[in-house]
Image (cartoon, rainbow, N blue to C red; front, side, top):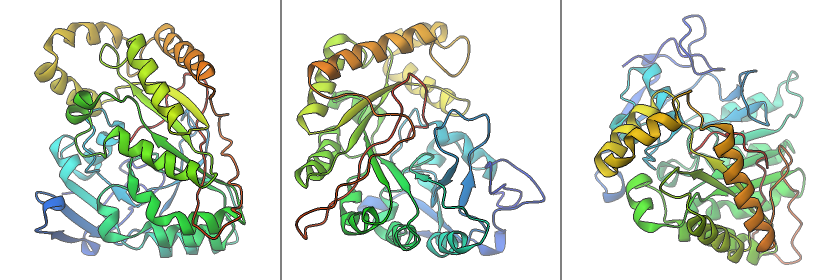
Length: 351
């Protein structure tokens, strides 16, 4: 396994800027049902605040990712490629070999305290989910949120995890001093599809429960409808069912994003497709013949359909890069934040 030569900024190999050294790695396994078959590589990172490459389509410039690899095991996850930088497998290895940056909170606090830091927005959950199952054991997010709160630094979170509800008190405290945004990712509500394509995630209905919990406290929360999977979750009745469920959960916005297949994710997804839906392989080869993204005409069609449904159900898209401010609560119960992603059919990083 190659721990050296990992750039802290881009995630690509670079010999003069290693993210951490092999001597800093401790490997653990836990004999519990939720972590059976999973190996954790605990490392002391040298950097935690990463600059988004200039060519990126992201509406933010800085990210924090306390984990690499993800037990959500989403077959389409774009971040699979990042495991190859460590000589780890981008298929099952990505799902079961989890890198944990155990010093993430202290690194973040140090960075936010530095004179060079200008208090820019920090996005989390843009590479792998910061509220995946590992977070239940390692509890890195409370320290990260506390650092952001203490420095009044704006941030946003995108997650498929219900564990975020554990940190509602911290989110509330942060929202009193800075802008905080939360979006929940729910691409579809078809449970049969969910069980095969996102096997390690909470069910779509449980994710919508997170939206309900926030809405129940008077907190706006957006839903990133991602990914919309061509020929599997894009029928008009399927789109309607998802938007209706999102609206019923009290989401303030819904923003659709069509599946994209970057190298690493593409191979894993196509092998899954061949096993589960072999009749679609040729159609995917044609649809994604030009690269990682579906054609613009297809993206625009999905976006138009979802936005029309959103208008019908009384919700709309969020503005790109502008997470809503969480309203201070009148009661002492914990509450949390709101959604952020863009309304245009651009592709954000998926979990």
